[in-house]
Amino acid sequence: MRQLVVSVANHDVELASDELWRLGVVAIEERQVPDGVELWTSVGDEFDSVEMPWAWRFVEVDAAVADTWRQFAKPIMVEADLVVQPAWVSYDAPHESTVVVIEPGSTFGMGDHPTTRLTLVAARRWVQPSTRVLDVGCGSGVLAIGVMLLGAASAVGIDIAPAAVPVTLSNAQTNGVLVDVSTTPLEEVVGEFDLVLANILAPALVELAPHLRRVLAPGGTLVVSGILDGAHDHVLAALQPLEVAQTDTLDGWAAVTLR
Image (tube, rainbow, N blue to C red; front, side, top):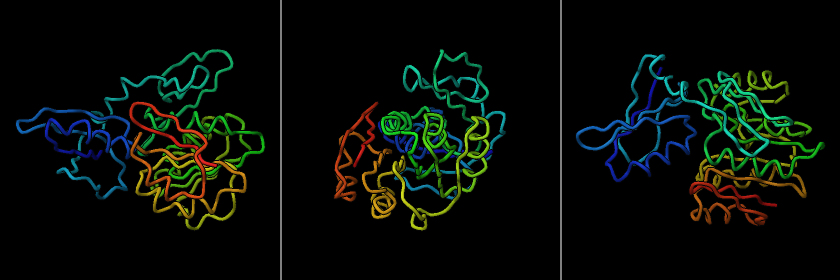
């Protein structure tokens, strides 16, 4: 299994970790070294490089060692009655809870990152039996599957990572829902959606803004995340004339609902 190793000074650990979380990694290990800290995390095989201001390298490690984080995984309480459950972890769900069972495989997205939790909570407010949903950057499918379990009419997931397709399809089957998933670029997506979810990096949100607006049905709702609280005005400017309906924050991250 391939791991990404990022070398940083001690004072940059939190900043670099945030950058890795924004990529959607499921776990980060900090290793103290003589000249600072090394951040170790698993990444999908489709990643040939990353863009960050610190030195980084790929290292091949034993898969059994790389997956030790799984021993410490636990259900994520998104809300009192909404839970994301690692597929390998036993969980006795409270009565009438919605439980999204996820196996991330080689994709990004276990469901524990603040941006995922924020997006799922925001999406829940707008899901109706007739809601057509598009999940841009679906990863493991946690958001697309989540909205289907919450009662949406249909969900389409797209991701630039080829591994997202089989992983999302497998997770959808585990949860007993249907999700149409592909590597179709957003620029090529046809049709309109009542609810569009885009939990991706701020530069990608800015770049894709015209198409995020294009695929949004009249009167529809767009939820964007993967952005820092207090540092996303440029994203909102790119999405005009959509107007902010609500902003949710958690641990320094934000999810913004636009209409």
